[in-house]
Length: 152
Image 1: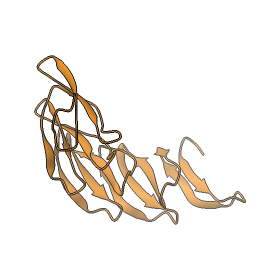
Image 2: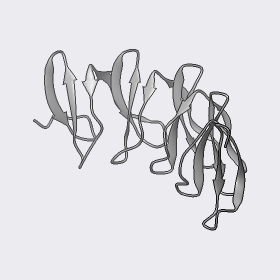
Image 3: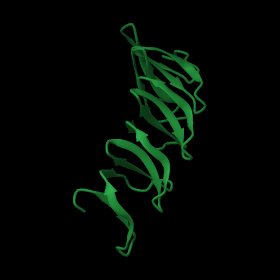
């Protein structure tokens, strides 16, 4: 309505008034919303669960969402706790138990607790799938396992 977004229920009754610049569908009881270029999450009643303070965010995956604050990325849980403080240049959603991150121009992987399982050292990297990830180091492309060992 008038360029703003809100929510209605199945019968068309307004549940959350249209006041947001952008909204997502409801996933796992939370919806991503944007207001005045700040990103956050609300519940289905319209309560701000994760404050609209972020410069960008990804959708939740495995209970965490990557969030950007002051040009750095970290992760928040569904209660709004920043479980991994923003320190990465880029952060991706968890996939196959690990999240790909970029720090100082190099890619690596962290677990959901923020432990650097595979330190950022790769020039190019892709998310894990079925226990393997494709990476590139010094012009050579190869696969690694979740321990960072080269497998082929």
